[in-house]
Length: 389
Image (tube, rainbow, N blue to C red; front, side):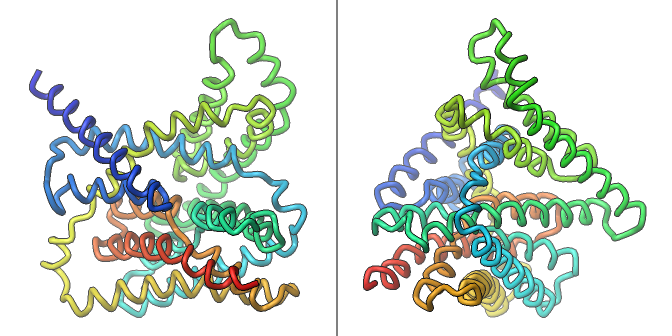
């Protein structure tokens, strides 16, 4: 019974600390994920050292993050790309290319391997605009030109980021770019995309009718999630991250989810289970080990450079791209700043990198600092730029 007791204590501590600090962040109008991360830092080895069985937290957390990414796919509204499609796509490409290039350059200048540099570049590529959306809603301009371009660019940005993650994580798994590795990656991507496309094409016909014949309560919710898990498993089998399959499965099933109003069910599931992952992400941080392996001055330089690369890549890349498609200067700056926050997929990729040994603790620490800096500064900057319009 002792082992079961320790597991239950750990899981209970995770939920208590996570939900308590999520409440604090919600009160401060910040993303709940910041509370989850802080909870992990508090109860992990960084401060209190209360968690005994991190493996159990990790298993539940990874299952939760697969569901979270599946939900992200379900909620990705391709319609957001249509009204300002060209502008949104150009803005997203500009941000991803600039951020990826800057991060790759900075990492290699500090002497990290090209695989590690690729991975940190992929971490910095995605955007999480939940903070931006809340700020635009406060200003009453979420559905303005600026808001629409940001929403559309965020959709395209997520798709680009998942594709980059699929390719880079596969290269990391194989350790090199050999012909057989490239072939295996290509086959895996083809199967995942082909499977997602088949699901998309049959979602409003065969799949919906088959589920409608079920005699089980909640069958629609469960079977859609099962399809997502199948594609996630297929993705992992072919050397890709399971998150790639989960995301594109959600993208393919989005029309069913929207028409049957399933969002509340999946959101409830995510709110309960995903904190385990983000708390686990905080538990993984061990700053004391950094102090033993790297000089403080070098650590400050690395963290500052990564944070600056993450901010500059989005502000300059997205902002200049917006300017190139004819958007005025102030709005272009607002779009660049609005695409700046990180607090989602980037953290998931960082955890993958740390747990597989590709990322060192100092780079992982840099990613966490970037998340906090961009999430906390974006609302203030957007208010400064847009409140005087």
